[in-house]
Length: 322
Image (cartoon, rainbow, N blue to C red; front, side, top):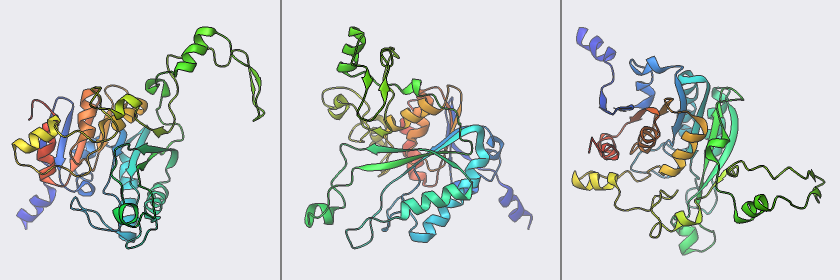
């Protein structure tokens, strides 16, 4: 009996740690209810994660299906909410799903999102679309074989918070001005007045140089990022075949995580919604792209992953651990 009680009270063991963060291996629903992670309640500025998608077929990285998935995902909402600061954010990437055996999209991801949001009374701050320029043409049966659908090339990213005014500053994620905008600023004049939409544009409205344009909520890599052979960049798509993570996995004969989060996507939300020194949590860390980006951008991080093989592989993202 005493041994059983000690086992029940055992605290989670860190798989590894760095200067800025810690990785834990285990079931996130269980670990987030235990010390020492419970000490972080109310201190996490952003929960950024991509849970197993609500697919209608099993994947080797683990996923539930149907209503079972909806209920499982919704249970995390109040748990996540406990960890947030008063102005913290939850950012969740959910992929699309198709009905089994027929060319019809499933509404399961939307049901899961709504159940999650409603369970913790969260505000839906904004929806983002992550367009993957290099995604394979899927679903293969309907796109490649029967040719009755076009390829599914995006995922939705949902930004939520328990307040309607979470910490956010779009000045930290400005994009480069277009050539025409740079010419307009240089010229100092443009065609002001009424537009067909009935908006009346003042003579000075667009002549302030804000050092960049406000990005749209459709996240698309710039043209040069779609050409990784020409420019050394971190594109939205995971098209590289020999980065530090993959070299580490090959060296130690570890299986790659099949759904690695693109670094550029994480960077956008880290810079948009957090400041250096803030704490970021990823409860479904996979290959720990979130922790790696957070460390590089000067944020603290906590990550949880259930699969020890993926945890071991994620060490390769940190130079001193690989």
